[in-house]
Image 1 (cartoon, rainbow, N blue to C red):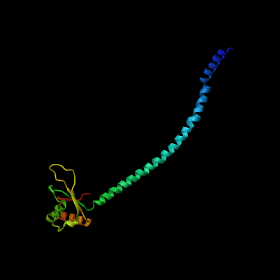
Image 2: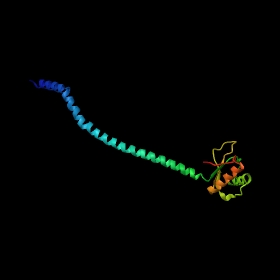
Image 3: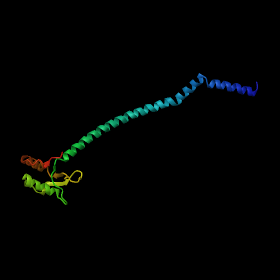
Image 4: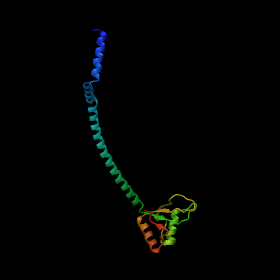
Length: 164
């Protein structure tokens, strides 16, 4: 047998072996041991980490919901001293606090001075031909209640309303 014949015979045997089911099984087992099992281990660790992170996300979502509710409560509480006044015609260089005090004196009949007003300003979007409401922040909640109680008795409700 010549060298060339031996090469052909070896090549045929190799081709036969490389296409055999035994060789495919050996390769599949080697790949599984080398790739699949380590990947499953990594996936198991990642799934555990994902579960932990999902728990943290849920906790944070719950916390955000509670904080948002508390912020809303605080915002509502901060408005305890606010009064919304409508019906004032917009003027150049107007003093909203003075307008409010004059309203209390003239329409409601309360003897109040500028000291009860912490701040006052127009609110809402500026639109041509409309008069925006005025928000008045009084220094105390007690002052607000006195004004609202008196204006309800007198029926001046068209001008003053609580903004909550």
